[in-house]
Each structure stands twice: as C-alpha cells, then as structure tokens.
Length: 419
Image (cartoon, rainbow, N blue to C red):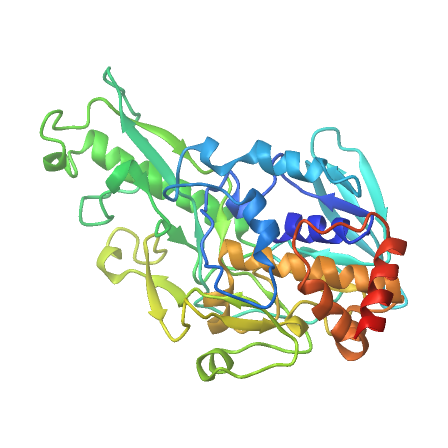
C-alpha cells in the first residue's frame, strides 16, 4: 500500500514515476494474494493525507475475505489512470547500482520473461516492507535479534454439497484440537503466524512453508482425525468441508527498519513527544505479537499460532503524528522509505504497521519527492530547508494535480508569495 500511494502522490505532484512491483497484483499485504484488510483510522487532521487512500483501499468485511473484496483491478486501474506513472508488474528489483554514495539505478528481473531492466532515477523509495533496496544500497538498518513479529498465511474453508476428501501425508504434524484454535467464520485469521525467531529474510520461504505445513496439518486433523467434530454435528467429521483458499504468499509484519534522522520509539508515542515535522497520524494500538502459549504443544520449537499484546496508549480518535524524518535513509542521500520498514523501534512498529497508516506515509513521501525535484534537494534537505513547502503540499487535497514539475514550481512560488 505504501508503494502505490507513494507513486500516485508523486505523480499528482508532477513527478515521472516508475512503479516497480514484484507481484502480478498491487497492494502487497493488502492484495488478494495475502488479504490483510485496511486497518487504522483517519482522525481529524490539518493534512488530508487520507484522501488518496480512500480512493482505492479495500472494502473487505473480514480478514481474510474473498478475493474480490480486495479490489486488485480497481487498484491497478487507479494507477494506470495516472499519466505520470509507468507500471511494471512482475518485476523483481534484485540489484542496486551506487554512484557517489547515492543510488544510481536498480535492476529489475521480469519474473515471466527473465528480461532484465535498468531503472535510473534521481530519487528512489523503498516501500518493500523488507527494506530490500535499502540493504543493497548499504543503508543503515536495524533488526531485532529475536522475538520479532512473524509471518501469517491466512486461509479459508467452506462446506460444499458433496463430500470432499483430503489426503493425509507423512510430513504432516500430528495435531489435535488442543493444538490450534477452531477456524471460526470459515477462515484462519492473522494468528496463524510463525517465524518469531527465524531470520525474516534468509528464512523467508522456510517460514512460509512451515505455515503451509501447519495449515494442512490442522485441516488434516479436522477432516481425518475428528478434531473439532463436535462443532459440526450434522456432518460429524467435516465430510463436505473443503479448503477454499490458502495464501501462498506470506504476510510479514517485521523484517528490518531503515534508519532515518529520527528513530521513533514507544516512549515517544506514549509520552506524546512533539516533532516539528509531525505528519501521518497513527491510530492503532502498540500491537505486538508473540507465540500463544495455549497452542505450543503441537510445535513447541516452532510455534505457528500467535497472540497479540496491546499497549493502548494511542488515542484512536486523535492519533499520534509520525515525523517525516522517519521516511528517509540517514546515510543514502536519495532514498525515501514508506511502509513497515520505516525508521522506528520494534515496539513503535506495533502501531505504525497497519495498512491505512502506511498508505498515508506514501502520500507524504510522494509530495516530498516532488519538492526534491523542484528544489534539486535531498529528502533530508526537505526537512532542513523546505519544511514549509512540504506542509503546504500536505494541506492540498488528494485530487489536486500538477501535471508537470513546472506547474508545481509555479504553485509553490505563489504559495510562498502569499505567505
């Protein structure tokens, strides 16, 4: 969500944008592939940063929900409607070229054709969540040694008209009803989560595969071993029940943070520390995930069911404003960040990581990138020298368009004279 909100915001402020997406659909965790619904609130603010997000956020009623509720086609249509954006789907950015300590280009592999493209630009935004581009560029990053929030692979099931068989395999875990929660409302929710102490990049696919094993094993227990049979008195052994969807792409919560000039902490949020560049309002509680002790018996060395622990210090009706200086790298001068890889501590990540909030981060980054282009400046210099210009742009409605950088330059000049 951070990536395409960044692209749309920058494009509407006159920038030419290449939006590079490794998957076949837009939205990352908020796409039909992962199905994390849009959470976070839009409390009253001096800055209408929610405008763009409200244009294309999903309308999912639950998480997970059926694919159509995540609006993949609508998201792609909104992006393609922007004349200043060139969209590259199925394009995995795998290498970075550096020049004078700045990013000169990234290389993208077309995952369908194996064609390699080179994307050069004066500015880049790492909205990958994992901080892939920042790492390859040598940006300062920070990762918890262990006890991170994990990856979820959510799933759905239903009862059909006919019996549905499910194979029992030797590689499945031997689970009972005490080893996992019953998947109510026909879906396995966010708490089917693993990887707390595994490396979130090096072990990424291993964590995903373990989640799949856990789900298949739990379903085997329900279908073939009678676990939770009492929940289905009509069919007893879930004879007609069938898996209808299981996410093959994991929804990761925490990888590494790209360090900016401000590293936002839990103490900052709880104490209400004020920053001159405060902008995006986060309204989620400080929500951190841990293995759920109730379900450890099924896999004590590699838990796959989590629990959430909330610090509710954030007032959801008011929100806490994240400073702009969390949205760029402190040592790679032309690199922005937006999404769950911004400059925060592990604890602060618990509140900034939800979909609507990271979308608004992208809106700010897009506007800041436009100022960089007008002023021939770096992201840091936007704070140091052009913060009034950024605040002016943040007051503009999401539908405001400057077709070219020259149009934006003229508008900024008029605003400066008026002030």
